[in-house]
Image (cartoon, helix red, strand yellow):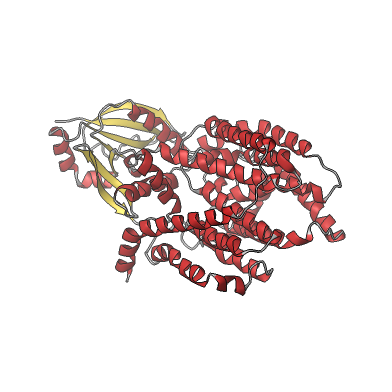
Length: 531
């Protein structure tokens, strides 16, 4: 059964993802045709402001890996989807005769929507690591454009819409993810989009919006491992608040029932064995982890330095506005709020359940550079809290919120530009420096021996790990002597206390470059000598 599931997942997922995206596009454009938009010069100028803001953020933050392990996996999978239409993650390979040749591969652990979308970009532009950053740049514009139109269509108007985009962009974590190759910004966009559709249902219940919400949540379920929880959560609460009724489903029963087929790739994937990174006897996600990690979240919200990628002053102001709103809502029942109460409950449940999962992760630290991306939705929801002010005070000028948004952006965007928090990761620093070294190497037919070969195979470079190199030492020597490899390089971390290379006794090597990467280790790039 496992082998059959593996075959279905590897060979069939590409086509299921393609069909899902096509169905979503069809439903979206059907929905869009029935929407009424007020277009005028002010809206046009506002949209231009959002485009300009997106470009400032995307060009202003250095594009590069921010977590690396996930990002390199996405790129490896996207390459396989592009060229072989197979869902596999190539982890080792060789490059010779102008072709990359895989050696080992593994089954992806994470859902496939982001690698699939990336493979579509590769199909048009050719495979390139830079395409991942470009895709996230597009996602950034869609995210800022969504909050602009969402807030701009309310009583806040165009000034409020631009202010919303500024407040979202003011969170440094947004800019960092927009300039990365990760899938977190896509998950954030699809969740906010789904909540927008819930908001629309509070205004007017119609079958097209319900269908679009349904298929959008299926898309979201195929982004991150835990994002599938939002499908039953949001739809279940929508039924509870009668935003969706059984009669609505009967109108398109074949569509709603048939759409469950798009969960099959994820189901096949879950049937396959996977190793997770949680320590022994520690749950991947659990209440114990949550209780252990929640103090970090509390401390992080009051971190007034400019190291963490969060807009602390904005977040605290947002929590104050939220508290004032909740107090006034309990004391005074406002008719303007009543139609949107279901939206408030559903949005709160979505954000808080996501927060519980991420804080309850075995490594869910609000402070850690690899984990800050988990809190994108949380801090983005805080960025939109100031727009509750209309329900607290009788008169709030949109211009005031715009000025506040511009001020917060000016204060916190430099945090994203400097990315000190990301630079504290030794693997990021090491990879950036080694990439720069290999950018100066003209030959393509090289082999890199290192501890994480997948980081280099995504550049269409031959790369293997130390174990494979030791087991195939004679073949490597022969290929180097026969000039199948123009060069063989060893990239490794050398402990200062021993100074021992793992391959020092296997290959004669000449040190090309060394640099300290931590107080305990230096990175050595050595060239294997032919003989």
